[in-house]
Length: 192
Image (cartoon, rainbow, N blue to C red; front, side, top):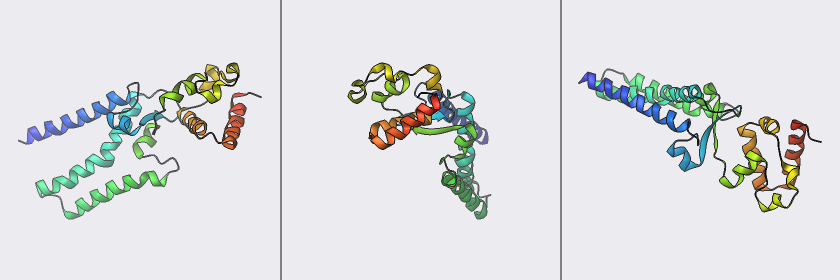
């Protein structure tokens, strides 16, 4: 019986981590749940998500949540853990749950260590605009298209987070914000 329990624990661990690894390394960088919520995992420096980053962020989830929960729930099964151990496990989970409130980027420990964060998945309408610099909506299509073409080097200056911030500014269409962002971008990529 004990051997089957160990096999079950190992099997669930491998299946759970394989699930996250498979979907987060995919083209959408999101599990089914993240897709449903319109979010995905991104590397903070804007590069491609690596297997090491996905493994690191998901192994930390086991330390943050599954390990203490397993200890808390096993005290009722085995009867060997004290009430203190159950409270310690609850404190452990609570401290990791509150961790995002204690850092400026609101990252959980797994994302902090892996160099990732969870971001909103870009909407399909603006994805082409942000990725290629080619106008796709009516507002920008009225302007000369050669004025808004960016080279690969200019696009490489910005990471995923900056491009998503740019997308939000474009969606809100606040003239003051757009002017401030345009000035910042021109300065950063060397446009006058």
